[in-house]
Length: 162
Image 1 (cartoon, rainbow, N blue to C red):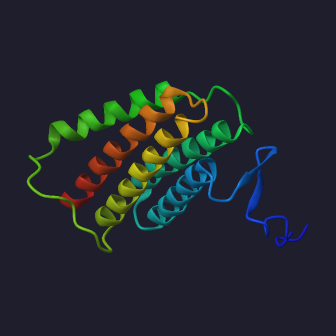
Image 2 (image 1 turned 60 degrees about the vertical axis):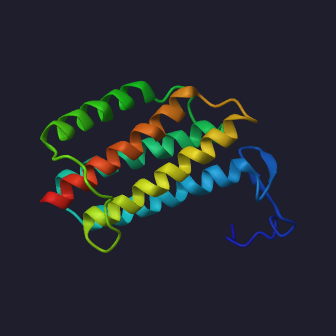
């Protein structure tokens, strides 16, 4: 099958067994998540095995969420346990962290790159909130993205001090 199908030339895409406008909230949401997965994939290359393992875990969960929202994946993906995991990790890092006095900077170091990932996670959260107004979205997806951005912030802060 060719990558170029010409099926989307009319501004529509076939997605999850349905036809949707390319600028729909659904495709905006999925595109934001896809962007985050791509950025996290680059972040894996920029750090050691411990951080790579954390990032790979996030990517795996994001792919499951994309399947859930698209209707192409399982209905239960263990979001509550993942939220609790991130909350525990945040608490551990927060107990060791210094007080926050300024925003993280943007640039090329790993901590700065993870801060970029955090901002895209926030964008995903905004898109999921908007989508939840028109489609049924598991409330744990909303919670997951809120915790994910906090988690990425704390990971970036940890990297900033190392």
